Length: 120
Image 1 (cartoon, rainbow, N blue to C red):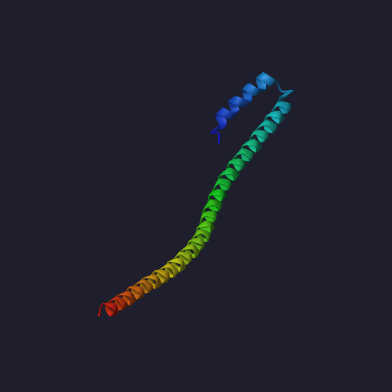
Image 2 (spheres, rainbow, N blue to C red):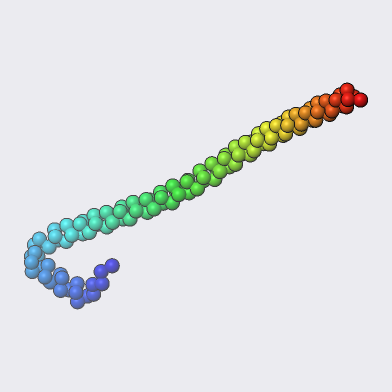
């Protein structure tokens, strides 16, 4: 964290002793330690909050992917139903068209026969 060696620590404690005095030094050290603890707890809360946000964003991305997969399966089933319906319609219309063609050919064939019979 802080690279404070023994000489730096000795210098800081000497300056603190001169500035604060030996009488108030324990109170100042207590307030400094509580301040450092509060800063550490805030930093850990901030870090955990950031981690929660990161996890939440990953979870929301996963939820989106799952919903896409579920929606695709639903869409695929609906598309297959529509294709089946379309095939049924096409088959029915083709049968109707074939029947119309056959009927028209039969009527034209009958008309040709009757016209040939009348001409003879």
